Length: 301
Image 1: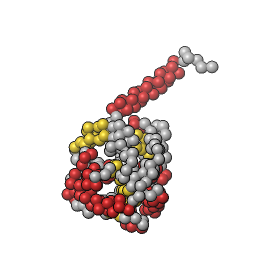
Image 2: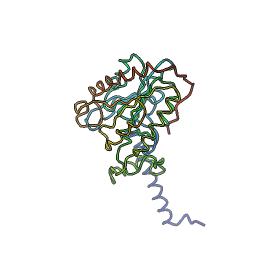
Image 3: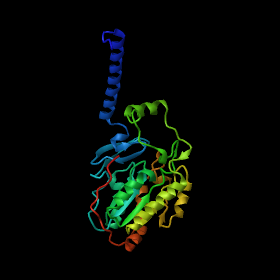
Image 4: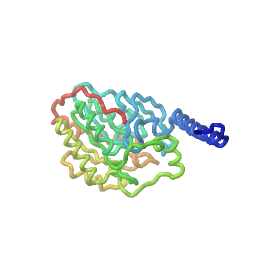
């Protein structure tokens, strides 16, 4: 039987309660501050994530440039207007190069393309997504019946890492806490790794799966090769194995941010949109009406 009058036991219990309380308070402060990845995202930052729905963030830091840009999302967690209920429209899938990292929404290439086509172009890009995260998300969106889908994954698939995306699992306690992530970042620091997040063969397989999924539903497909500045350029070459129209953007250094060589600036977004107008118009001319089932999007993990 426990002797609660034992001073050593009481001191140990008090110390444990104080320690747990201290760490709980720090975690609560970090949650309220919301100053890490979670300001934009919901889900697991190392496994699967989405943009939060109904965001209205006037100042998202573009750290490399020392500037800010605004981000708003709709009820589906898309950086765009609501998904069209009918009529022809274009769906753009991909990572931060589709999302338009660093520029305000009107300047993202999807919006510029929309103005040129006089037709909705829905921006479904999620920063950091590889094909491993993007496939389920993209398939659910394709069920909403776009006429054309632009597949823009690849940059993050080719990114070096320590553990491939296919082997990653949702974080469990304490790795899923903000405190743990901040301590790991400060004590261990980023690790570049020596393998791509998605190997070349699996990347091609994932892309081919998405192409087949779209075509089975009568959706025209355009592949956008955004791997030109990736860490493993062979991923871009692998895209040529797909039997689908392919656009390789012709952009220069001045079309990217000065201190962020991956992402397109306003000029680069406009240039990319201009290069997509004719290929998308050609696919639209071949498209047929696509049925739009009443179906929601997958829940945020």
